[in-house]
Image (cartoon, rainbow, N blue to C red; front, side, top):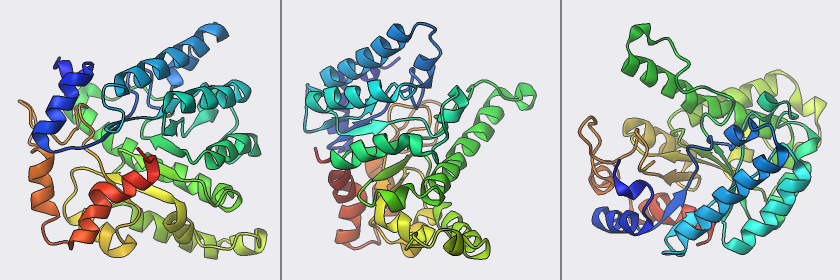
Length: 307
């Protein structure tokens, strides 16, 4: 294991080498939506696990607080504890919230339930984005058909994770969350962006075809318009599909990520064809005007996470 996985100073040095100024820090071992902590049987232990992780993250970020951006995990299985943990983590310097896109996998209400309105209201009031990392439901990374080969199985499952975030976006829009909380910002993390224009076209079509406007006359925008107002997607390997997304959506809702130091990250290694972030940017973004490049690489993220 490369020490940059846990050593903040080593990570900072690597970021300098590849030309990355800031990095938003997401969980891994805890589960992409903190769900693995929810498996513990003692409620006190689950809370202490979440608090310990958030404390560690704030400590890690303290090495370069303007460049490491911590986003807190929450004990989503207890909303009262969640709201208290949010206040505690804001004081520690956290800039966003990571939570599960499938809380019903753990016996909690689905995203569309009014149960979560206190969470959305809290995040909106404190200007904290809600971040749905892919595979944040109750999924087993190794629960695949390895008869096709371990690596082929992993690649197949990864694509399913990416596209799974379309469901979370559809729920947040169709469930009225975006309508009720117009200032809430939502991020689809590590999902890519090329599929988003199609997903929004499908949502708009279904919205009109299924009579949502008659069922919910209070909804004043189409799904694609709610997306433009308050939802973001992240890209890190796409080429032609990135251009497709920028051409249709514009540059204001798209963020560059490296996914570093994850296995699928935009960084060279002995078993990957990935290049460095700078090489990728030079190849893919060279034909865009400077203002568009700034939005994709800096301004959108700075507006969301306000380091």
